[in-house]
Image 1 (cartoon, helix red, strand yellow):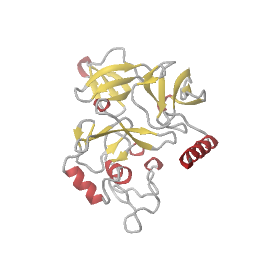
Image 2 (cartoon, one colour):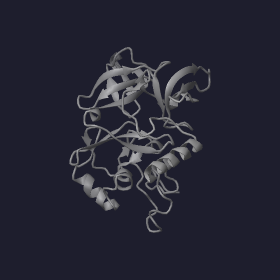
Image 3 (cartoon, one colour):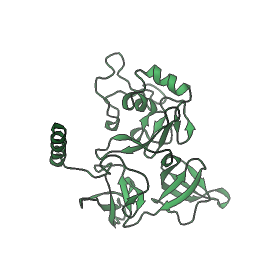
Image 4 (spheres, one colour):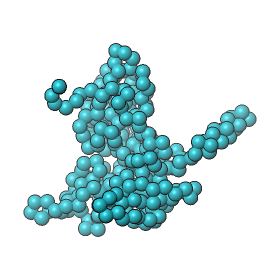
Length: 268
């Protein structure tokens, strides 16, 4: 058996959230680029090359992606990234200063990564989910967020599963979104990935997984594990702009009716 970490990832083994075709690379190159180790897990990230080549269509080949990032034209969370396999994850802000474009990495209601275009003002901050709250050496309190950041001396009101509003330019916490009933959340895992709704209730299960019950704007109820929930706003108002659909999942019949209405309008 081979030693060391795996360096390749086949198209068929790639996460479905990347939306890659089965045969896109052909027989000669069935390997899309495997994400580098970084702030997000492999199954929860999107390589920078897939974003530039498959989503934005700014490059036709992997070599063109390498040339783009080598010219230091791509920024992730305000920092230039020259690794074409850098992992992009939920809530990351990707900026292309040369074209004055900014994107936030979010999920659509089918659990696929979507590049949501945002304004320059909104690109100055992002939301971070708090994973740990601990005391370090010499009694220094710190928190660890979902994208691997360690922030020392946080507000004592910040608890696990809360979300913080993080200013990318200053590197400081600018606000707090509490994980409590009545606040708006988005699912980042499970069958309801990408759906947004207001927390209705919490179920505590000793020795098991706590379950969170939510309700969307169309009064559809759904539930998921507490680990899959990310607070994105106070009350029903989101702190960040949401992609098309606003996190409301439609049934296949509702989607069909919407398509028919759109065709009728275009026909007129």
